[in-house]
View 1: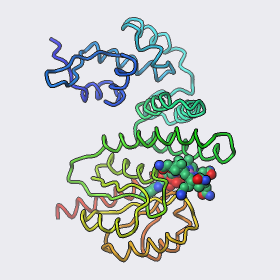
View 2 (view 1 turned 45 degrees about the horizontal axis):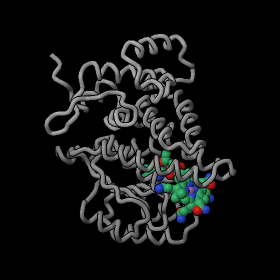
View 3 (view 1 turned 90 degrees about the vertical axis):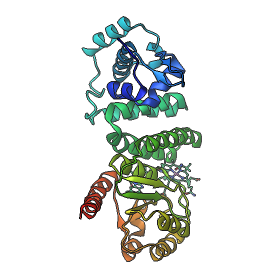
View 4 (view 1 turned 45 degrees about the vertical axis):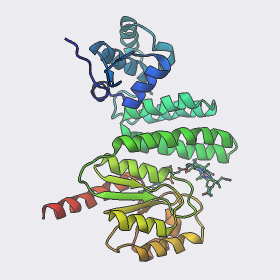
Length: 315
Ligand code: B12
């Protein structure tokens, strides 16, 4: 007998995130789950089969809006027919990094059309197809760099960048909330120093840490040293991560970093990333902080800190 499955289980079985499952239901009526007395969605085995087929169809390039209302047999036929004709640029498996270019191009097309609904879907589809970390490192970061170049070269307007930024901010926020854990893992505080408005680097660092078993406190952008130090005193984190993106010659940054280093416990590692971090290498060395080059580097650094944290707990 089919008792109905909660959304978390459906997410596990289909590889779709709960957020995307709800969005496909709300926007396209892709499935119509029953509700419990308390209003929670419950899904049948048939819903799970439909969602799996819809996922496979979107991964081979079908638009969800066009296929959401096909019946189960039609969907199965579509997927079976397409299997022999998958374009070589389409992702073959979640681990296939060659799919990144394909996903990025679809995202760029949505940005060029200023189509935020499509952009959100393209980004979510890419994160499901590739897995969260490859998505951040191979799709989102290069996509942000590309937006910057197109904007600098006049191929995209400020409005294109703003449409993209709004969708990306909301997606990273959702990823951050979804990957937070209640574990007893080490704690990372992250944010950006005073004058630093670009916040996606700091957010991506938080999401990466959370997905790797760290508890996280995300402070947001543009914080004076005193405020960061207050948060550090309150939470006693195992590391602090800051992002410095623009500009690379702000006289306030060395002052803020020196102040922060004076105010917080010297034993707490201070990790600094972002495209302009190298420009402040001198002061970063002086205060015994570290430049972290990218999210891969961050993962390695966090793994090391985590093993020390675990050893201390056992010892
Ligand atoms: C989105 C965006 C904006 C948004 C930001 C929205 C938001 N909520 O964050 C808004 C509209 C606010 C904005 C404003 C401006 N922007 Co802007 N922006 C960008 C864009 C497209 C993405 C920025 C981003 O998030 N980068 C962060 C990540 C993706 O890149 P990254 O620094 O290389 O970081 C990687 C690693 O270093 C690491 N990392 C980053 N941080 C951290 C932290 C830690 C702890 C760790 C471990 C790792 C890590 O993670 C990333 C992945 O590996 C960039 C393009 C670009 N190349 O970055 C331009 C860009 C940074 N902006 C630029 C400019 C010029 C501006 C403005 C001056 C425009 C204007 N005339 O108003 C203003 C400046 C505002 C200010 N006072 O600072 C220029 C800077 C050029 C320069 N000389 O350095 C860029 C490069 C665009 C360009 N090509 O010209 N921008």
